[in-house]
Amino acid sequence: MSKREKDFFYKLAKKKGVNARSYFKLEQIQSKYKIFKAGQKVFDIGCAPGSWLQYVYEIVGSEGKFIGVDLSGMELSFPNLDFYQMDIFDVDSKDFFQKYGWVDVVMSDVAPKTTGQKIVDIERSYQLCKKSLDIVRVMLKPKGDFVCKMYHGERFDDFQALMKEVFFEVKIFRPKATRKISREIFWIGKGKK
Image (cartoon, rainbow, N blue to C red; front, side):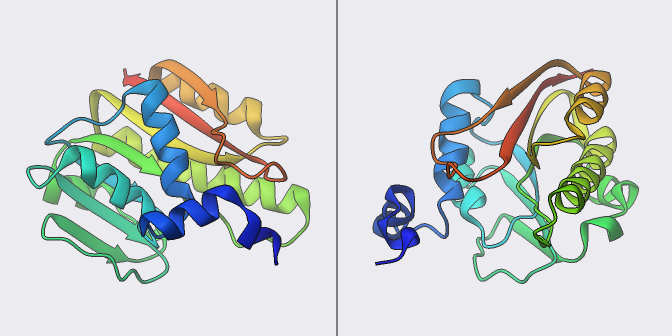
């Protein structure tokens, strides 16, 4: 039996019928920070295969609106989701804003294709987070919230400084559903300035 097959959250995702274990990471973030509410408009960066959307849909519901962007395709769909298969670096925030206006929450579970070289992977993760924050600056309404996955490392202080420019409250969280060997941490930005 592989490590993955023995993993509690992997098995729980299969049992619950959700796309990935990351569903439970967001569930644990929501339990602590109360980010999502019924009827919100949510922008999901790096949304495939859709486990975060599956979780948030249960809270936001059919009255809300979802905009998803990912380099990979996605099989998940529902009527109030607009999905764009594209590179995050090709996202023109101003075009998206013209089409959708303010969003209540931006969430980013985007991750780089890893090389196995720690410094390279951390830098790529940082650049993805920085681009996500650029989208936040344009799309997120004042007092809105942001959740962003990042590989912990040398760029931690740099990204924390950027987050503090944008949000009144900045927190770091590591859900129990995160694998022990993972460098993932999650930034929580509460209350956009």
